Image (cartoon, rainbow, N blue to C red; front, side, top):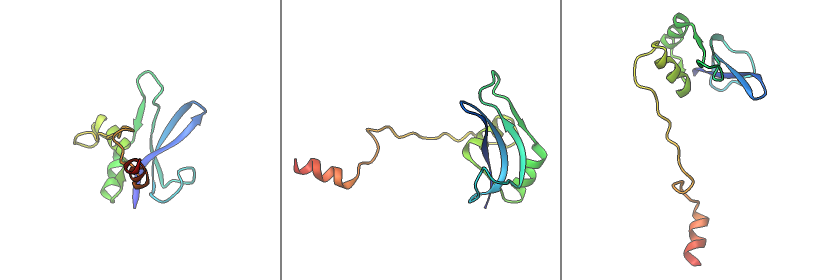
Length: 107
């Protein structure tokens, strides 16, 4: 399956991301089918450069965007829709393993 996702580049503690189209199972440090943009989260304006025509082409061919890339596409008005909100599970709310529950029950 084709995915549009971020590939990290840049220096230590100064990431710059490429927006790439690649197979989902492939390593992001390897070759990508195409580089369709860049994203710099540390700049003052969080610079995003995206090639709208190529992104829409790959989506028409069946490529799916990762949640982060999808949110970038929505923010730059390339794709319509609502941003995806990632739910975070707090440590207290996380499901416990069965072994931990049985130890508490016997104590």
